[in-house]
Length: 296
Image 1 (cartoon, rainbow, N blue to C red):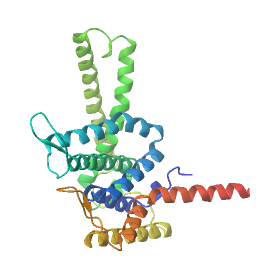
Image 2 (cartoon, helix red, strand yellow):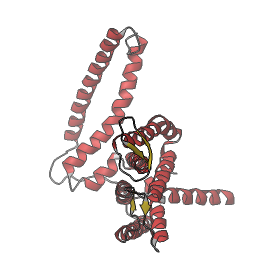
Image 3 (cartoon, rainbow, N blue to C red):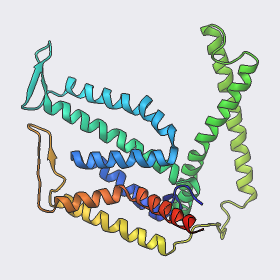
Image 4 (tube, rainbow, N blue to C red):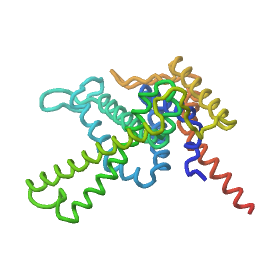
């Protein structure tokens, strides 16, 4: 059984979902959409990465949120609600603080969605979607996505091996550490070059680039994918309609003010339904398995 049900959907469904939610997260600055997208991104990333996501959030994303929220009022002094004055005479405004917080939330939300994208959209899915349209670019991107985790794992192996003989970057004075680091870098460069030669030979042996060459794929578009595609497209249509009528309009300058329309509840519900779609299918799958196990 696949732990993440959404990852088992057709690559076109995965790609459409992430394109929509990442795009909306980048352009909608309404506090409700920011909160919804942040909650769903963090929750889904936790489902994919477990406790590692919590550690990443505390060590990387939380400091980024705080730093970005602090830096904006230092350089942006717009706004009508003045809270205090800096020593140089520039005002500290409530609007600049809120805009800084909103920008920081948007930034870490997009990073979280891209982390989920990198976990779900594997290299084989990317090649399947774009292999015939842009074969060279899709191959380069898939190889790059595959190379980064392999390089990270290999550098751990090399570092541990060098540490056993006292040549790690943690041994010796500053000059020895630099020399040991350069040695590890030289080893990794040699490994990367040898790996590229082996990859090229393997591709040549398998007939890459020859006319009429076919590609194997395990992906099939079934009825479940069709319903998921209809669901995502319906949510996207409602969200775009809501944006067109101004349901997501929210201003931070010169004063904080949001526009509320009669259809706001519907469009915000559609945005939540879109952002929470992976969580919904995962919960539905868990409930289905729990019901099956209770009957056995």
